[in-house]
Amino acid sequence: MKSNLMRAQAYELLCKYNHEPFHIQHALTVEAVMRWFAHDQGYGDDEEFWGQTGLLHDIDFELYPEQHCVKAPELLRDGGVGEDMIHAIVSHGCGICCDVEPVHQMEKVLFAVDELTGLIGAAVKMRPSQSASDLEVSSLKKKFKDKRFAAGCSRDVIREGAERLGWTLEELMEKTILAMRACETQIQEEMQKR
Image (cartoon, rainbow, N blue to C red; front, side, top):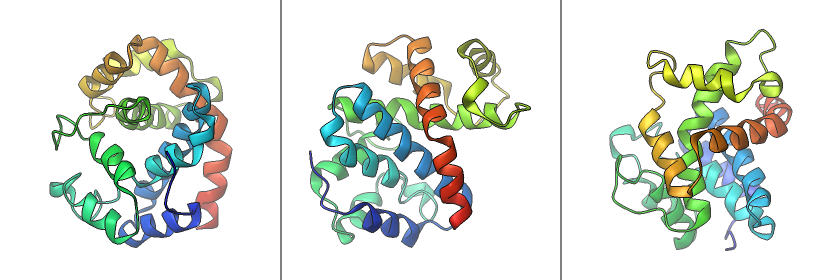
């Protein structure tokens, strides 16, 4: 799996349709987490593809929230994105806003981590350290069980994501925390440059 774009082109395409810092930060987070998982899952040669898929996964959400994953193919094709990446991006909305199934391991990871990175990000903001470096799975599980905490992060999607991967919820949480620990400094630096 190879990307048709350079990373700078993918970022420019993201910023063409996304201006809110929250959406940019989420895209950068999912990109970095996907790059981490590419190596973790034995797809290191495809890191760029995994990363750019994460970067562009919500390209249509800020401007077209009611058409999420429906408008994306048009925006992505206009930006020169290939069909395999378009399929991967759209599949993260399976059962939520579209019926495109995540098939490839990368698509299943994206489906699983999209909502979970939001939950972890919210949990990190509540910590005195403001960092994932000291966030433990046990603490995240408590936040996960509290439906009022980060209510916009679907617990059902996170559970389904773990199931699609054949992992326990704890396994998915642990790996995603490790991925976010590995990239949080880089994301903070990128956000400061904006």
